[in-house]
Every structure is written in structure tokens, then in C-alpha cells.
Image 1 (cartoon, one colour):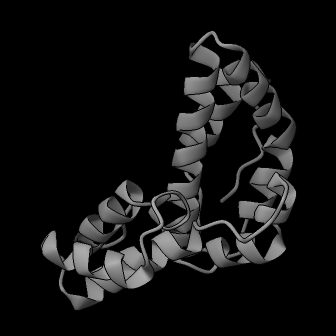
Image 2 (cartoon, helix red, strand yellow):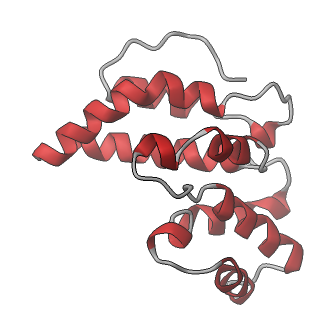
Length: 155
């Protein structure tokens, strides 16, 4: 999915650390230093940290408040952020449907209800592959949730 070989490292680091600002309370600059320590040059470290920043929820009391229009606009405007967000959601869905706990069943139900809005919020009119969601991840989410795949692409 990366359009340039030199983007692979930043996307990997962004994926590894995608929740670290909101969950681990690392700062933007903490992540920039870590990305550099992992061997990324300044430009690559910037790409990785911007990706993580775009995937950091807003402040809010509910899922809707934390992931509102401003949040999704940031994802849609950051290279590779739609890819990493969809990969994260696909992994969360898969985990939720494969682990038989009350919490996981509840989360699978939440993801099932959110899926149409979630996919629409990630959609962009861009033809630049860095801003698109891979259809295979969308198909997997539908399959794991036991939903019929609508065969309408995200680009």
C-alpha cells in the first residue's frame, strides 16, 4: 500500500505507536525522538508522528465526541492514516468476534453498528493511494462481523 519504499518505515512506526498519545500518554515530541531512535530520518519521523497524531482521539465523554468530524478530517488529510485506522479497526473487530467474552460481544455489536458511518468518515475523493482504504480490509471487517459485503468501494 505504500507508494514509496521510504514510506514503509514511517507507516510501520505509525502503526506500532498508533494509540500511544491517547493511551500511553506519550507526547508528540516523545514519539518523534523514538522514531529517530528506530532509525527514521527527520522527514520519516515527521511522517510517522503525524500519522499517530491524526489517529489520536479528541477529548470527549462518548465515542461520538472522541471521534467526531474534526477527528476524521485529520485522518482523511494525513497520508496513510486511513490505512492504519482501517487496519486497527479490522484487527479490533477480528479480536472481538474471536474471543468469547461479554465485553468482546458488546464491542462487536458496537463495531457492527458503527461500520457504515466509520467507512463513510474515512472516505475521500482523493485518487492518491496514500489516502485510500484497502478494500481487502473493508471486506474482512464485513466478513468478521457476519455482514454482507456491499461491493461498493472506498477507492
